[in-house]
Length: 218
Image 1 (cartoon, rainbow, N blue to C red):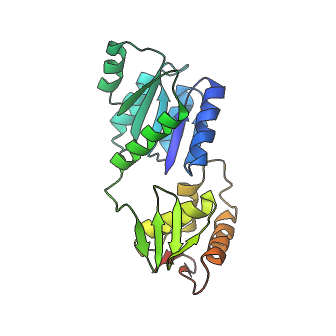
Image 2: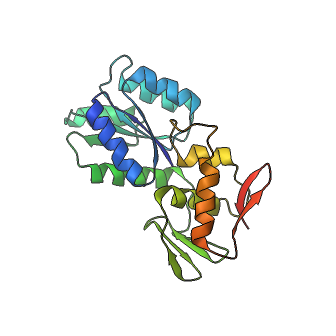
Image 3: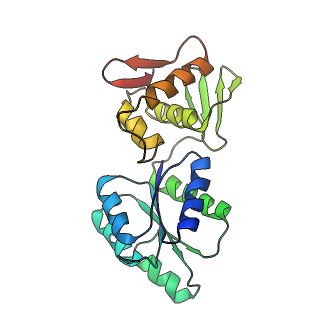
C-alpha cells in the first residue's frame, strides 16, 4: 500500500509520513506540485495526500493531472480553507475526500485506510492460506492457531504474498509495495525480510522461493 504525501509545510509533511509509516504504509514525500507530478509519472500510488495550496504547481493542477491520467489513485485533499464552496470546488476537481487543517493524524490515517478500501477490489476481512490467518485490520498473524509477532515490514511482505493467492510475487514487486522510493533497488532487504519471516513462522516452511522469479505461498 503506497502513499504519496504532497505538502509544502515540511514539518507537517514529515509528521504525516512518519505516522503512516507506523501503520505499515510505504510513503513518499514531496514539498511542491512539480515534484509531485514527477513522482506520479514514475510510481503508482494507492492514495495521494495532497495539499491544495502548493507552490510551483498548484494542488488543483496536480489533482487534474491524476484524474486525466486515468489511474485508480485516490486523492485526499488538504486545505486551510473551511468554506463550503472551497470543499465543493476541491471535490469537483476529482478529489475523493477533503480534510480541513488543522486535523488529527489519527483521522487522516483513518481516511487513507477508507480510500484504499475503496480503491482496491473487495477482499475478505482475513487472509487465509496454508494454515496462516492474516488480519490486515488488526495487523495480526496466526499459524495453526498460534500468534506470530512480526515487524511492520515482515507483516507487509506476508500480506502481499497472501493477497497473491498462490501466485509468485517477485522481489521487485515486494520492494515496490512494502518499501518507499528511498530504498536501494539493489538491496537484499527483501531476501533478509523473507528469511526472518520464515524463521518466525516456523516449520514446515510455507514461503517458497521460486529461483529467478520470486516468492509464493502455495
